[in-house]
Image 1 (tube, one colour):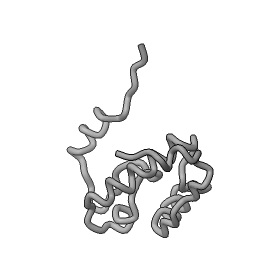
Image 2 (cartoon, one colour):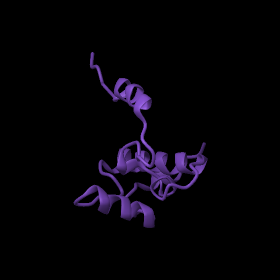
Image 3 (cartoon, rainbow, N blue to C red):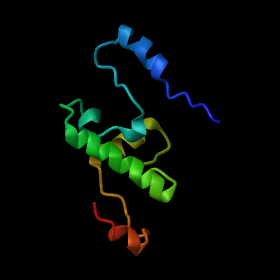
Length: 95
């Protein structure tokens, strides 16, 4: 059995001490809207899900950099990552 700590307790405590203009979350999963401090919508959730799916399929994140600021800038520009390495069978999956 494995036990994972996803920082939920820490986040619950941090919610009590929120500061203005403070970014919350993991930089690698933030949507362009969140980085630019625009309204977060369901499209932000779709972007973040896409980042996770990419990471699951390829074992790496689609937007990387030497520092968090570089990662944030690459996400802000949000060029679609190259998915040409996916096996053809993945493209055939239908919901």
